[in-house]
Length: 415
Image: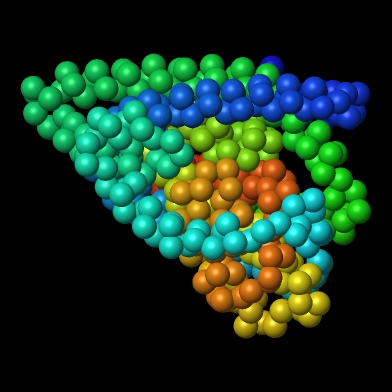
């Protein structure tokens, strides 16, 4: 069974289980326990997969002098998608203004968040510049940049331009194939993980109850997400690829990591799936999937920026009672786009970080109203990661197309 079908079936089973047992605290706790375990499994697989795949990919790209194409296309796709989606979130609010609902976390003490922004900037340098590369490989706990820097350094000198280095290059390439084989098995079995994650997600939303009385907010958020996935991102991919890539075929074939991202709200859990399926389902080369997709866990967070932009403006509207002006809309969208590049420091809470940081950077005080975001993190961050997974898949397809080596996989051969 194809992954996009099995993952949809797992989602339906998770919803059915919630409808039957969702009011049971034991059910929710069981689903949460299994979900937390499987998310850790995803992170456990991602670290060696990203290191080996990135190192091997860099060496292969250097061998064929394709590193410039990957660098250029990755940066272009990152900037365009982030800016477009962040401003799209503001545009959706401009034409469909809606108050952010008061959740169960409203009224919490905001003082514990006061040092978040300074902490982020102080944290970025030591995490990105590890003094011991071997310590880096075993200490990654939610931020891939240090590992990718070590892998870049290793892969750069792995270029097989000397006969004595060629065996090492071949060996690393073989290890990369082994890791991708593991990632393929992980993706094929992921529907089991998604069942538990979906069960917990639905039960959490049911216990929260906020969305049952805030249908306008929910429908607007879902409509904005669908608009981005069905119109904006496909149009952007079609334009930058010269209309040589069918984005809607990728939308269907990459549905599995998107569903996993929605229910876990964790990019580490979905990235091994995205790396594997972008190769087998979207026609990207292994060396592109092994390099571009891990990079997008850091610089491809336009989905998180869009959800944060919309949520921040909705919060301001709810707290002030007045519609934000055009200047505020532009400022929030621009700040959300910029801060999205720091959001990977807060794995699983990217949207919350971007929204809170935007308010602090723009010196907007909501007197604690921002605390209502916390109870909505599974929904908001889940939607952000869902879109981000597609940004990575589209970006990998765009890069491979620009290299002129993209393969059109037949439906029979996809995972």
